Image (cartoon, rainbow over all chains, first blue to last red; front, side):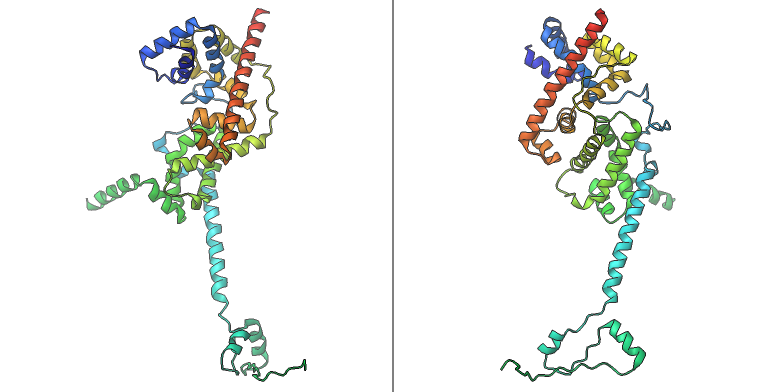
Length: 160
Length: 213
């Protein structure tokens, strides 16, 4: 085994996935090669975080508040084990529902309106414009008669 | 009898729902479906966060933050890609934000060791490779010292180390996850490896000197 292959096998040695023969070969190389031996020892300082497949549970690190709960098994998990997530998701969904309801309410509250351009484009010069809710409300207080806006088809040219 | 059978069948079908079905339901606002999805991937996400942070409560917060971001951004998920890959990108960005937020002074030499860390260093220095591998598994000090060493990396370098070394992603995949160029990923990876090797060797050298004294 050469040094390149030996160093490539460090991770497998750490994760115990090397075949027995390959493992023996690597260990024998490390015994006889001071450079690779030094590299392995340097590798061992970061390997517990970078290459370990699990965290050590025997000595729990104290948490910031000291009220850490033991992690549960995967099959035991449900939404109840994500209390913060559950409540924040509920708030997020509620906010989305309220926003959607508000958009729909505004959409249906404003009726379709006839614009002056529509009136002029049509032949009906005595068109009734009835889609201005604020104006309708004000007029309804003073008079029950409908509002008629008449447009003239005669165009007077004031520039000549 | 029929009711019991029907409920068993419902349980079975619910337990066997695919990720795609759960994602579709979650997109319609079904938080229970998303909860099931989160339960499925919780261990993987937690393990990923533990590569960056040693405090379990902080890891727990980041896991929750990751799932909240994932839920809020579900509309950006495309069905043709694996959900785990998409989720990993979300979690990576959560961890990256946290690393940058902490604003640690990078690249400081670790000088002071706790007694358990010093014991671990002595073991690394004087034991056989086999003994080191066996001992590292249950030693919290080994993990703590490794975290301190990795903490001395800049956030960009740390991201590359974890994604390349721990997650086994290719340069192209890391570039996609982080939104960086492949050249940047290669440079950061080279720099991070070189820096960590120097740091580790200088720690072991320090340890040898202190033992001689």
